[in-house]
Length: 447
Image (cartoon, rainbow, N blue to C red; front, side):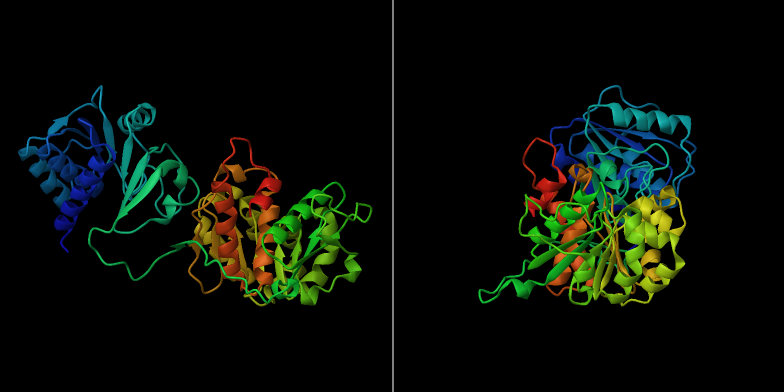
């Protein structure tokens, strides 16, 4: 399809979407950038004018030095009677951000900065065309000022940056229009989808759903191990064992008496899914080599990851394991330690860092955060779409580690078990109906 025809489709889609979400809007401000995103805005303005609306277009580049298709569309809008103004309207009912989209993120000049600050502070709703201006479409990072949209209409393809890092906060509700173009043959990631809810046959027993063993909980941090154990139990494991690193701690969970406590020397790692590191502190270090060598299926979290980051021998043992039975669940700082990066570098390229980590260690990686990324060797990564800021509290990561262990215990491979667990983990937070803060214990029970 010719670029101009594609721009015409995009402009029509934007105008139709604007009328769907703000049908009563009269004055519609459309700030347009110097590229084809601005061309989409001109075309949208032309349609809105023909439907009796009052679009007001402002242009960052008044020199007329536009790409050919955008220049042609601008002329068509002028001929249709669209108002092109030198300054933004004092009052408007809707804003359509057609500044940059997926275009190169450049340092904003004073005029652009003024416009974006006005967009973000005004009461009128905002539609971002393709990507909120200032947001990196690939990484979801916003190193500078960024439009905060109520709605984002992504065109042709969904961009990974809409769903991770700063993207979910900047985009508001995300909508998609393929403009009649077939799905692209290649993709950098896929969105994580709701898992199939497996039916449990009637003629089964606790042994049918596997054993999970939690190794962690040093002095003063036994709660983390217990939360992981509760996550595994509520996640569906048949039996959950707890090996606490603090030998003086109570060997009973009064809130969850189903949990079985064992001395570490009694645990048969070979026949269990081992979840190691939750509340492990420095004490987990001495146990990791044996765990890496003996366990069949393994989830490493928290202090186990920090120990691996500091020990090349442990890294070698980790990389020698089968990639289908090992999961690492780092938050950005733990990922940074494992990859010798800063946490800012991790956050500025979450997809790439997660994939590089998966390839380096031969494991499934669950890089936690807004838009958790699940990556594995030779596998297209997924970006999770569930979850919210209720998960930003101590212990929710421990619950996730236990939940992944439960999914592994019933026979799933590392990647699919991680995808299912991350979705369910976020879904539980999304379904929290109370106005009170959700604790990690609440989360485990919500599973």
